Image (tube, rainbow, N blue to C red; front, side, top):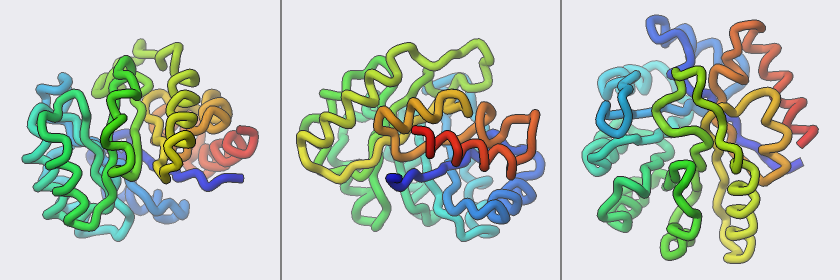
Length: 226
């Protein structure tokens, strides 16, 4: 079985008891924390601020996988790198100076990810694919996860498959992260299509109808099926 990275989204934990949530994830053996940084302009949401991420950094050694959803990428990239994170992903759609952002992150020895909105073609990565470590494919419109009516786009598997083939043709080592309604039901198909990094939220690890431990077991079974 190929190695699949599990990236629990901290915004789906209890936001008034974040330290307790982090401790639960550590006890589960999780080593990565997916943290969304949203500026309120990119989408009408702002779940976590910079000071909160700083405090989280002080209480845990987990890898911080930062996903920036902002109209001002450089500011947040610099702030996150100063905190000391392991991976920074920014959106291509809001990036005027893509190479500058890639180099800022690389020069801090962090991994570089580029996120694509659901309808953004993967061909937009043509020039920079060799320079990055990960592509984050949004399977819902980013920042609208709290809208329970927001469903995974119907072309999700097709896009993952296409990106996988694109990466293989270029012979580069680039992870495929999927984010948005990555559910217990969809995980097998997402993994089979080529996803290697799963952002886990309210429809998988943080499902309220079971415990974190039981949900993790279901996730691992789904990965095996995929």
